Amino acid sequence: MEGFGICIAMMAGWALAGVAGGAAGIGTGMTALPLVLLLLPPEDVIFVTTLGGFGAAVHLVFAYRRAFRWSDMRTLFAGCLPGIAAGALTLKFVPLFALQSLLGFVLLSFLVFQLFRGRIRMRLPQSPLAGAATGFLCGFASASVAIPGAPLGIYVILSGWDADRSRGNMSLFFVFIMGLSVLAQAATGLYSMRVLGIGMSCAVGSMLGQCIGVRLGRGMDTSILHRFILFFICAAACMLFWRALGL
Image: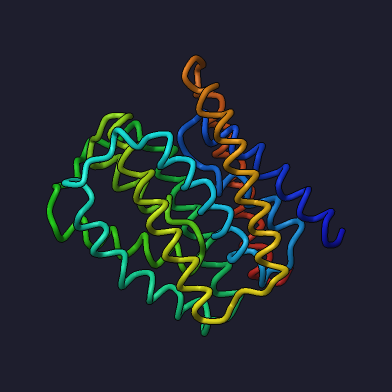
């Protein structure tokens, strides 16, 4: 599959992932990742996922713009800036198999945390150090492997925020961090016109899918969707480790 066909397939796949992620409130990029891994060469995966994730973030910040709290996020914003710089440099100089392994580890860690989250009773103190450290991890993960949602999701859960507060804070942080990651990756000369075209198709698909998903999620039980998303995260992690090992 080449050119226009790949753009259409990726737009459709990201739209479906957006419906699931918008309804469940999490996981559009992680749900779309298995399709990205199947259709694209390894060297394009992270760039396309970053662009698609940015499109998803733009929609989320519009959908949850009234629930954002600046006081919750100041230290996260501060910490993410050096993290993005470190992640972009890592993406430029670290071998591909190592990045694939890192991305697989991030997804696997998030999956394990989600599976056992009901048994976790600890709460993370709202300190500047914890916020800055989490911001750095999110920035690094965003610019290097295009998955900032894993460390941020764990931080949000351990912070004990309610659903609206979590979605509002995460939405604005995502659009900020993914936007800066796109700029940092572009500044290092890593984008080609082909990657930009496919990535923009993913961004449009994710926004359209999430517009539908957010509306569907308001009146339905999303527990099945959560399990569906976790399945795709598990599949993506397995595929990444498989590729990293050269199998």
